[in-house]
Length: 370
Image (cartoon, rainbow, N blue to C red; front, side, top):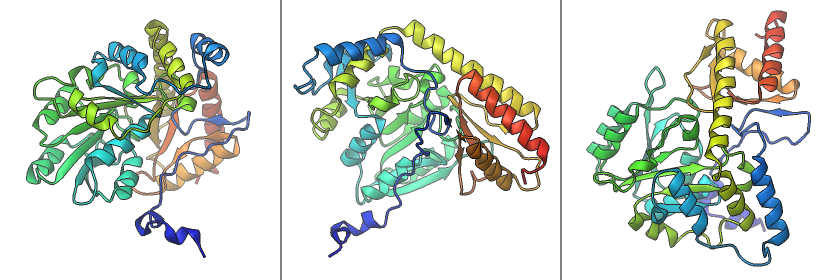
């Protein structure tokens, strides 16, 4: 007997989500998953240590994360009754797919975008349709609007990552807001990287003409808490009430709630760290452009990069990725068009980026880069 034979055939046929390589060796510089290069703030570490010592860890956490919902609402200019807390924003996405989508339901997303969306669509047997981004990698909101208007009863959800991943490009805020207003179905704006863009659509949730707007975010990128898995969603109170019915009970543990609360407690320090990361990003982009690389304009903590003046940009990208890996620097390479000419590099510390750049220059000078 093969136990896997009992698994649903459509699940067995799935590819599944493929994350960036996760190597834990101390000498590896990990720049492939868009994590924050800096550890959590001292107040966060202190809060966790205190919770380990004094909190009743033998008891379940607050299932509604009420204190965290209140703090998040204050930070992102929404209301506590419009907030849902998840075990990472991936759980938020899973809840939404379970609640809104399924057989005979349509999901619209741009292409390319976050690769988990198609996986969840396949898991829920949702019909996925995509609209290609424009040649400059900007979202084609007009084409997406046309697609939604042509099948208003078919689409149950549209997802837009803003800034988009993996491109790093943010949509024009006014244009995106008008797109949401015109949509016949709910629109989720995935703001995993919005803290680097200094603009959040969460402030518009629940307003007139925007009852169908949903916004999700995460503590994994900007707050240095990827290891604790904390995500959030803001939507109308009516939507939150429905989604809460299918949220896993006690889904966010005590330590994660404590850490997230502490992370939200000092916005001044948080904003300073965001500026530091963006400054390193802009410095690195300038070095790349001076050396003939094409760099997409980024509103995130990563850069999408290619070398257009080589005989084979795709071969160059693959060779560059492999060479950095040999030097214990992990970056992200995409094997399929239209991204196979590009390498995505998360922004590390200034020291890490200087080392990466030194290694890259030396490699290019040897003439062994394809």
